[in-house]
Each structure stands twice: as C-alpha cells, then as structure tokens.
Amino acid sequence: MADSSARGSSARDASAHDAWFRDNRANWDDRSAVHEASGYGIEELVADPGRISSVLAQDRERLGDLSGHDVIHLQCHLGTDTVSLKRLGARRVVGLDLSPESLRRARRIAARAGAEIDFVEANVYDARSAVEGCFDLVYTSVGVLCWLPDVAAWARVVASLLRPGGRFLIRDVHPMLETIGEDVTDGLRIQQPYFERPEPMTWDDDVSYVAAPEGGPAITHGVNHQWNHSLSEIITAVLQAGLVLDSFEEYAHSDWAPWPELMVQDGDRYRLREDPDRLPMQFVLAAHRPADDGRDT
Image (cartoon, rainbow, N blue to C red):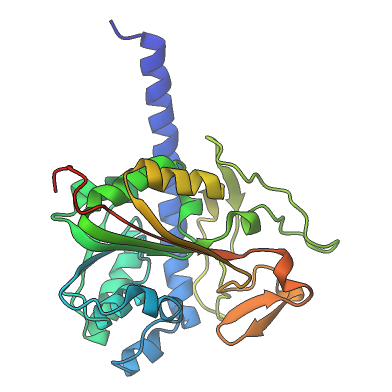
C-alpha cells in the first residue's frame, strides 16, 4: 500500500510546480510584448530572406546545412532563431514554448518572414507528448535552463525527441554568471546558488533583459521563478539520458549586458570592460543520440 504522506508530498510538489510555471507563463506573456516592441532583430530578419539571428549565427558552422532535416526548437519565445533554423534548410521545423502570447507573436513573425513553422504551446517537460515524431536536431538557446527546476528530467525529454543519430545543441548562460548578484557597485560578488536546488529563486521585476521603448508595453506580471544548474549537473544529465557528448565550450561574452556599467559592446556581444577572462558567461554543448542505442524511435 502506498504511503499516504508520500502521495501528499508528491501532490504538494506538483501543485508548487504548477504555480511556478503559471507565474513564469504570465511573466513571459508580458515579456513577449516588450521584446517585440524593443526591436529584437525582427524587422531585419523579415526584410532580408538570407538573414539569420545573431544568436544562431554563432553556431552556423556547428549546425551546418540542415537540408532535409527535421528540427525542434525548445523554448523558442518569439521564434527569431526558429525562423533562422528554417532558413538553414530544415525540412520540418517545430517551435515549442510555454507562453501563448510569445507564440502568437512568433506565428506572425514567421508568416512575415515567409517561414513555414509549426508552433506548439507546451511546457518543455511535456514536449514528447505534445509533438509527433522524432527529430534530427533538438536546439535550444539562450537563457533557457534557468527557467527549469529539474535538469535531469529536461535532458530525458531532449533524448526522447531525437531519432537515432540525431544531434542536440544548446547555447546558454553559464551557471557561474547566474551566481553573480545584481548589485555590482562593489564589484562582482557571488550571491546566488551555483548548484540546483528544489526551491526556486523568486523575483518580482518589471524589467527584462532588453529595455522597453518609452511609452511601450509594460511587464505587469513581474513574479518569476528561476533555478541554476551547475556544469556537472548539466553534463551528467545529458550523459545519463543516453546521449554522447561531442563538444563543450565556454565563452567570456554574453548576448546582453547584465551589468551595463561594467561591460562594453563588441559587435553583437557584450564583455566585461576589465579582465573579461575572469568570468565565463556562456557555454555551448553539442551531443548526439547513438545510432544503435536499442531504444524505440
């Protein structure tokens, strides 16, 4: 007979997770309006059929020619990277995101860009049941893992979406950057956890990582919940999910300026003004599912 206290604990955990994701969904619905109004590279993408997003451009050589490939983009937000994956020749492209308002805007942007993409509203943990078929590439980037409480469960979802021989690529914020507090008047200080914790770090912010234009949309649902995951936890999760690690790299640049007063812009990237090599800001992990792993496809 099952332990009733265990069932009660499980129900409470599920309820807490649901509440956290509801808050995050509302927060990202608001962010989507702010991000679109800020520009977000949308008009440039729409105007030039050969253009790809600045984020995806960093990994163009890693991705290669996607002609004839089926691709899924997890946590796709406004879909600018999703459109770019289609422009690299992918046959079928699916963009999946938690936020219905993000997807409404993503569909409109994709239509303007002439990109045929299937956008699916679902929590990333439900991606396997929300999407039919398997994929040659699972892609996700940037600022994605901090919104997920369980990195091991996430990696299992990624593996379940890949067909034998399929590839996985993630570019994300480095977990060391995530440990640095917002107040840097006395320099960079570690204030947040490095390792995964069951309880989130909860914030109530009316700003995002891009500035809202004057008189533009506002973030009215500011409460959001985030988790950090160490490099060892991320890599171990990928390996335990049955994937083979192909490469792992770290970088001293960011796609936005978390501390504008300490950073300088270098093209589309931002680096620390002083001693930029003292803090990793991004990582890129590439892996694949073995062609003969014996699992059902």
